[in-house]
Image (cartoon, rainbow, N blue to C red; front, side):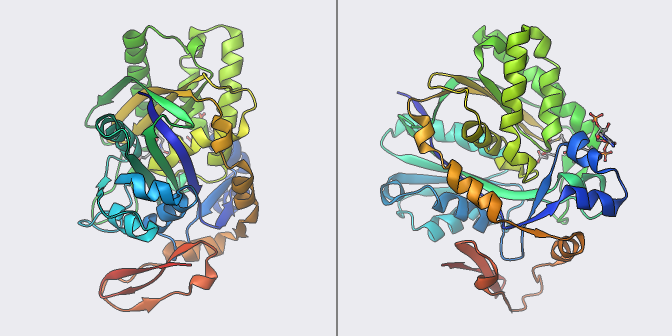
Length: 388
Ligand code: HMG
């Protein structure tokens, strides 16, 4: 039985910051951000979007009534959740109106959470082939104003429907993974911004890639030649390229050109959104599928997942017959085009807005936010959500 990705949804907030303008304000050359880091635009979440609403908006785009009855597990991968106790999967389950006989749980391991969710979902579907699992990767990446990490912030969510006989991509059984306790990036529970050893994190991202790719080659006897494209976790779009370059000489020129061209297509969406942590690898897959004209059914796609701290995994998928009919290229282009540009000072103001932590009541108007699902207030230390 084939198990894999049946549908992919994606949502990003309607506000963005132009990286050229951020560079000017921060006194650096714009090319540092647009070429050196590889980012054009950064999605900025208004106070009315949190990880719950981002994920619910992503999933609302793809689920029909039959899916809502068939889903019996919701797995929410995040590292910027809203509650230390209750899982955001429960909030999303309610906002989407899923049938109640379901499991709902939140998973955390930095940017690796959604990949862990997909692998767990595969096991669940193997035991329950008639059911479906909703895997969410939703995050708001915050390093702080005027920090080196600032240019690699972002916000957004990806929703993946995992099922038997999937329409988009079968996930293959072969997979290699690696864990080591390192401090490259972390966020203590008392902090709303991440701490990071930037250069060390870059090195570890590449070191983990080499470990899992090396193990994958040994396990499968496959080579880079077998892949139509490789997607990477993209904290910023130059990062995956740095890792890819370390192995490109394993193949001839033709394969090198193909992998580099497909890499560029796989970074198009991420370049205009920023880091969305857990959803980032799957946003890259979506970018590849919706922008590449070279891919056909049967193609093998490599997937490198990395979550600081750190866990890395390399796995692969096979594109299914008619996969292109399951994509939403036009809607996603419209979403990018409809976004509203904000100035650096507007971004800084939004960045500093905080949800009250003293139990006070606050309300926001859902009219200010074009999203279908928004956060409209806080009461009794509880978030109030609104579905339009
Ligand atoms: P920085 O010190 O601001 O930048 O930090 P830099 O000086 O290293 O410059 C960046 C690049 O721009 C360099 O290219 C420069 O040469 C180039 P490279 O040598 O790296 O190829 N550059 C220029 N290029 C063209 N024209 C110019 C120009 N000037 C400079 N004029 C850093 C950059 C990424 C470290 C920082 O932004 C940061 O700390 N970001 C956050 C951490 C991060 O993203 N790490 C990535 C790996 S870890 C990971 O992926 C996990 C993560 O997603 C978290 C999770 O798992 O939850 C982060």
